[in-house]
Length: 508
Image (cartoon, rainbow, N blue to C red):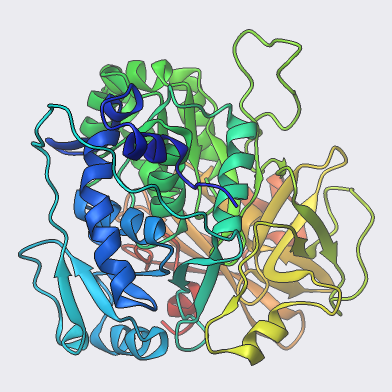
């Protein structure tokens, strides 16, 4: 048993101590120190604890959301973050499935009809607390590591969203493993503009800094100008998704201030989807910084990451797993990872950089269960406790993991070969006439499946021809990996995290 937030606990116990005056959260021009966060979250935690059971949080990108989730964690009450962009049907399903006792929201937020049955508690955030001497607050109770902390709902691409029950143990072990890999400390200041209803933005982007005793500056809405401002003003780390880094890469040639700010950062991290190699290299060339990629999912939190190596390596700093474009690094401390054959039982031993297998994992970072879905929980795990991720990958001889896509949508079986869509997408994006690319498979009487490319051209009036793109891929990869069909689009369908919605393409 241990506190998820040592600095916050210290601020509660000693409201006028050093920890209490450290910056914790900043959203725009509103901010809270650890002392102010403690004084705001403690009474809300008491109110939440009285409700019993789970509580929902209307997870807008605001100070109120961060305070609401922290209060629930202090109280030991599982929080269910709700995506404000979800439709009424999806929200209705989540409310019925998780049965929260109440919903926390910012004052003035208009909640949809799907939440009308829930008691509402407004999150009253005080950003102008009296700085005089205050009495210590109640010490948070010692809470079991297996106690549920969050119920985060999956995207529901193959059915209604499932609620992944994430225990406190998974949060603490993941954040501590990332601290080891990235040398993340209380001196770091994180900047990001991620949504707060999922693992990346909420657990890594808000709870991560609070566990370290550091601070976070949330942009509200991602803009390259905001990145420049914050990294030039003392922020040390940037978290983003590939669409954000693509916008950064596009802006860099004409924005020297952005390039200078990124060069000043200690750590640039990309996640939630693969960062195209082309964007990775453009950012490295302009800034001297190599973006670190990490890999995880709702049910597992973080599994792999490249490691941050300081500019002046010391013997005490463990090397290995340095950033390498196109990979997600190596498994994090405490994570067991294996690739499996198609039958899901035989582990692949070869680290040859070519053999494709499904990733299966074990470790303290895993979720406990899918809420109210014992059937789905049982199906997700092997008999010996390995979680089936559904992601396909290869491992290089030195252990680096390269994700090639989802088993259901990105593994293409063509002409007797197992081909990952991701490497073809990276090759296509390297073509100067391609702005965005996605690759899927479709039935083919001769090949089994043929490779289909969905292209957003750099110039809609002069798109590269299908033959030109096929030759481009065949030259970089292998002839059997070339696209046989090419579709041209104005934009690729993406979800809130910037991931391409391939099922929408397949039915386009």
